[in-house]
Length: 179
Image (tube, rainbow, N blue to C red; front, top):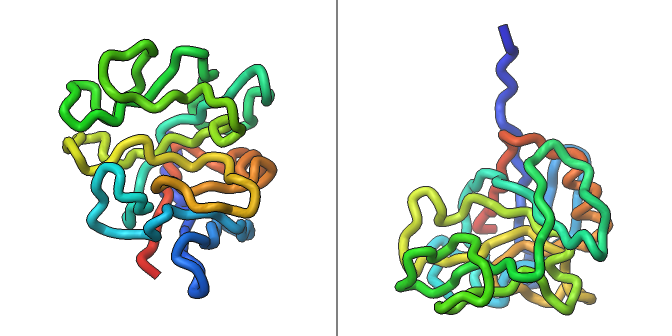
């Protein structure tokens, strides 16, 4: 009989000095992170720049195979392709789902010129069930230099994100706290 392993949680708390910076803690790891340009909030809406507060499942890891090797992790992994996107059009039937470009509605491109999506941890925010307008494409991804704010995601250095992925298991969760 298989032994039950309870899910573990990584915790994200914002810095008391800045609503757009925080710390992600998982086991013995304590990692600086960037948060949304509008800080964190429980009432997330599309385009508001808030990192959503709550506890979220880890879905999969995406990566740019032309820039980084396949990340070592126990989570599902798939390479990003040139036409990959993520729909952010609130009225589209594929809202907050992966899509292929060219796409007739608004959709973020996952194959970016900058390094932000070289490695992406997709989390289960507003996906099961999806509610139109409550936010899309909320990921853990690579941070901009200086930990500049995100559009609502959690961002880590590439080194720290790679290190974190090695520790994660499929049942683990991301929990974003209010304070």
